[in-house]
Amino acid sequence: MLTPEARNKPVLKQEIVFAAVHLVPLAAIWTGATLFDWIVCAVLYVTRMFWVTGGYHRYFAHKSYKTSRLFQFIIAFMAQTSAQKGALWWAAHHRHHHRHSDTPADPHSMKIYGFWYSHIGWIVGPDFKKTDYKTIGDYAKYPELVWLNKNHYLPPLILATVVTILGGIVNGGSITETFSATGGLSTLFIGFFLSTVILYHGTFSINSIMHKFGNQRYETGEESKNSLWLALITLGEGWHNNHHYYETASRQGFFWWEVDITWYVLRFFAALGLIWDLKGVPKHIKYSKNKQHAQELRKEAEQQKQFA
Ligand SMILES: [Zn+2]
Ligand SMILES: [Zn+2]
Image (cartoon, rainbow, N blue to C red):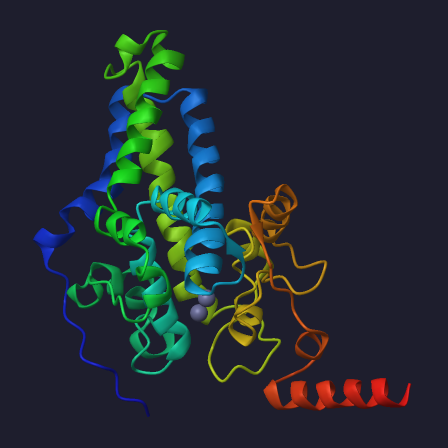
């Protein structure tokens, strides 16, 4: 039996903002919500989920493709509009998760610490607030990324402001309606805050649900699973067992039927020349059961080449 590490309980006053973000959408009971607000909510959920998975996760945590220094900053900025803290903070903790998956040192092991802790407990607890810059040294060498990581609240603040102004113009008919109940405020409550909350729990579900429910195609030595419906909700992250088996790939759906919308968008970005060197999945990995089997398949393929 593995002995869990001692983890501290949340300190309420540190979590007031996080709790408030969850409560703000309820203010729409007072303002009501327009069709425009709901459209903004849906669009901000989908686009920001892309930046969470394609940015925080596949770029910063796993370096699964390359890009320019400018676009790298844009990726970090866009990912941070999700209000899931700095890109370096996010990626460093995620690297720890892969290194220690479902062992006591895993920041959010569902198997060891239970559903609620893996879903949200580790976020609201005081133990994982700091960025481990050593673990993310390959990106922490860029001062602009460290600056953005420290000022992680800026991108969501800018997005919330833009969304509120837009709501004033579309709902209220004028920019002067930005802070009126029938103007921009309902867009802020539903368009920005509600989508931010759903986005939180969509992302968190990978840490909790995806280490418990679904199928395990590959023997990875931990509990990661694959699930189509979570892959749809999270734009491809539901192929979590694939991902734990071969984390360097830019794609998480390994087969054509494994829908991975993030991968399609990344391919599109590559076609535009914004990113490059996307990493695929080698055949011996794709068709193996575990790492040992993969080595056997690789050797077989090499021998066949020799005698061909
Ligand atoms: Zn990962
Ligand atoms: Zn995982």
